[in-house]
Length: 75
Image (cartoon, rainbow, N blue to C red):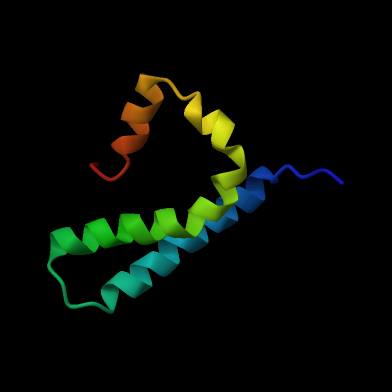
C-alpha cells in the first residue's frame, strides 16, 4: 500500500485546521494580536502529526525555505 498523502487530502486537512482554529479562537475573549497568534498555533498543532513522519525532509530545508515559512501570518 502506498503511504504517501494525496495532495488533495493535505489540502482538505489544511483547510479544516485553519477553519477549526478560527472557531476555537473566536470563542475566546482575548485581544486581536493574541487571537492571531492562537489561530496560527492551533493550525500548526492540527497539521503537525501529518508531517512528523517527514522529519528528514524538514531538516533539509534551506534558510530561504525557513524564512518564507516563518512569514506565513505576517501578510
